[in-house]
Length: 243
Image (cartoon, rainbow, N blue to C red; front, side, top):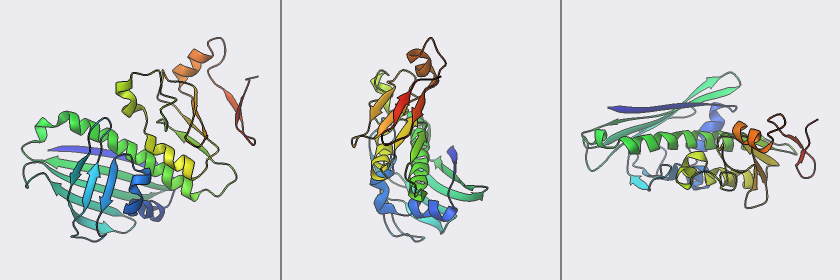
C-alpha cells in the first residue's frame, strides 16, 4: 500500500473551492494534472479521468465516484485492468479554516503492481502539488474584483523564466497551465521563485509580465547590492532601482 497526501490552504470558502473542483468541463483550462474529467456528479457514476504527471505521459482511467458530499468531499476509486492489480482511491477533502479553507488532496494505492511504479508515483505526487497550486490560483483570481491583480506563485507559469535550467527538469519548475488563468483574468503581473538558474523576466502569450524572484537569481543579478528588486504598479508595471 502506498499513499500520497498533500494539502494546501486557500483563501476562499469551501463552497468556492467546491465549485471549481466540480466544474469538470473547465479542467482543461486550468488543471495541469487532471487534463480531462467527464461524468455525472453523483455517487456510483462512472467517470473518465485523464491525468498527465509532470514529465510523464497521459493515462486514462474509468473510476467510480464513491463520495459526493457538496462543499466537503469528492472521492473516486479506479482500477487498472481489474481489482487487485493496481488500484487507486483518489480524494479531495475540504475543511473550513480561518480565512478560508484547507484542501486535503490524497490518493491511496494498492495491488500487486504498486511496488513497480515508484517513479510514476513520485511524479504523481508532484502532479498533485501542481494541481493544488493551480486550484488555489483559479479560485483566488475568481474572487478578485479589483483594478489590479498581482499573483504570487511558487512555480513558473511560463517557460521564459526557467530558461537556463536543464530542460529535463522544466516540468518540475512550472506549468504552462498556470499561464491560462493569468491571461483569462488579465492580471497585472505575476511573481514566482523556485527556478534558481532561470531568467529574471518574461511575459505570457498575452504580454503579462512575469518575474522570477528566487533568492539565488536575485543574488546573481545584483551581486553588489541587496537581493531584492522594487516594482512600481502603474499603467504598466516597471522595475525601480532600490534606494
